[in-house]
Image 1 (cartoon, rainbow, N blue to C red):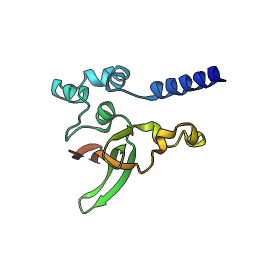
Image 2 (cartoon, rainbow, N blue to C red):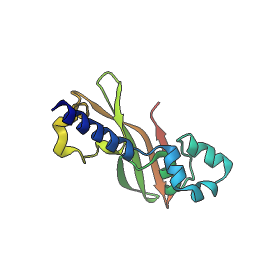
Image 3 (spheres, rainbow, N blue to C red):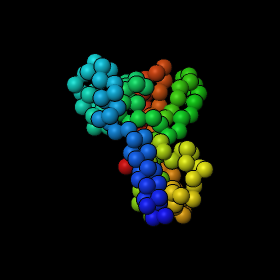
Image 4 (tube, helix red, strand yellow):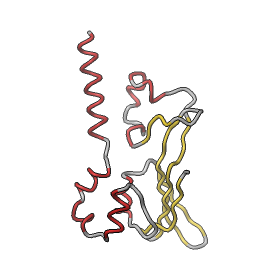
Length: 142
């Protein structure tokens, strides 16, 4: 029984690690795009940062897939907002962030208790606003 539980936990950990996408992995998978950028843009992306004027592909390289997206319309037109989220305790201690909390594990909810940490709260780390496929605004939590 203990051996089966250990194997199950190892398999779950491997799935989480395989699904996580680091900046280095994203750059390696998109080497041609990365090499076509200016040195300043490459430095920002390698540091996991974005800048006004970046395209959606550049933001995906730097930050990965967004946790949430919104369409927005205002007097100057329509655009899209991408949000990158961290879940933390009531006291502000980070619990987790990234794509894997989005729901693929719902059938296994009881098996991964830390995903259901009591009194957790959701905080947007970064919001990126696009207009015509380019970043026009960045909000970062300090």
